[in-house]
Length: 198
Length: 198
Image 1 (spheres, chains in turn orange, green):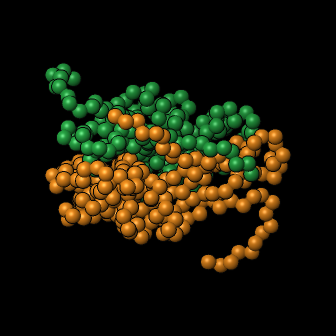
Image 2: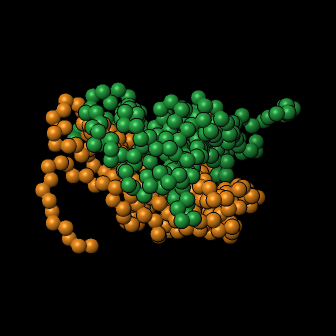
Image 3: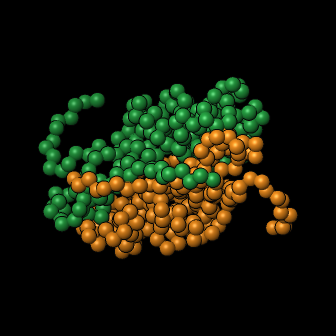
């Protein structure tokens, strides 16, 4: 890419909506994500479904009830677009139109392959439990073969994923900066409360 | 719907993956949501993008840079599938395969219409600020006509939306219930930290 001359800035630096293929940053988003949104085309129409997803090595995995419509579509080779979004903060500016959000969003395209080997499926399904609560898989009853059999597991390679993100403070117009209103970033986190025992 | 005879249950009640069209519950999900996932078909491929969205009355609104690819697609009448998902809890069961999540997910289909009236656009864009931080719109500089002009605003009617949700405790197999492991629901909330001033 050609080097552009640096221009002097009077507004704060913002890393805005940059697209990257940084695999470490992509893995971090997938590892923080509990639910992704899976898009596919059915009868010419878009369909976007929330699905549990978890990464093991270079693949992102999904589990579905065997025989469900989505499992059938994936098995039939449907092209997928999978988007995982982490919200990092509310960007509160001094003008309505400069408000924004800090986020990281990973997008994967491709055709998922079904994991059919029972041992691999069991291992991957067990990893989901540890993805949600690290260390828990060894405390609960492991999957039984008949439970594994009724579950379809699909995998998408992470290698081709892209990451789009915004970070940093608001970018206010210079003539707005003296407006007497609090501005900055309100951090967002998906907080876990205390276990409510059943 | 025919009344089904009640069967005795030995496992806890669970409201599982039920689909409803309860407009009040649908509005609650949309009002809790900062970012939705918008699906559309481009060149026969699915595309799923995270977008800010907010409800005013019977419509869900999006804003886009005028001239962006997505704004062009929406203006050209692309069929959309918009999914808004709120994660309510991790459902921790006593076996790996009975783990689940409590969630509420709203799905809307349709073709968005562009809001072109400047006064209506300004009002709707101002409402976004109050959607993110109630009361903030009156504290910041209001949108100026040229800011409104470079922003495209689209609306989808909420009336046809559907809601899919799970709530309640884990459903363990009776012979798993004596396993000595903590089980129940860990509540999830998108927590807001303290403003980091810029």
